Amino acid sequence: MESKQNSYLIDIITNSLLLTSILIIYGLLIYVIDISLYVKWWYGISVLIISVSLLIYFGINYRKSIGGILSYKDSFIYLYILSLFSALFQLIWGIVFFQIIDPELGDKLSQLVIESTVSMMEGFGTGGEAIDATIEQLEEDIPQSFTPIGQIKNFGWQFLTAAISSGIIAIFVKKNKEVSDRLN
Image (cartoon, rainbow, N blue to C red):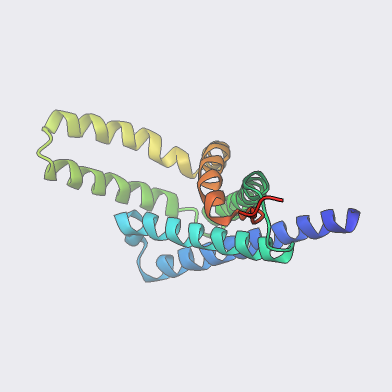
């Protein structure tokens, strides 16, 4: 029994490290190519697609490794724990990256987010006063999200988003026992 629990935990940690590594490598490629790509609409969607695809893959592999049958509840728990470990590893990476490797990146990204938001608001025909108020609010809020405290607060939201995404993904990972249509 203890061996199964150790194997379960090792599987979760290994897969969460793999998921985190893939997302870090993808993020570093964007960083090297052009940091302005971080604020493009497709970047967030691509990260979501990569994450969901890998979670489905890891979930199905886990299901196969335990005999091919996995309830919705067990699928959810596996995916939720895996997602939280991955979020924790990404938090650690984010703090190291924004505080040690490139401390100016947070300011650069803040400015890019503000410029992108203003451009979008102008495209929608938003008035100057509303844009000015938004800029003022963004200049106050966005830089805070790149501080260690801001990143830890964001990690708190991961508990909710991981629960929602794990709940949805578990639908595709679960596999119930076959029910015989033959009555005995």
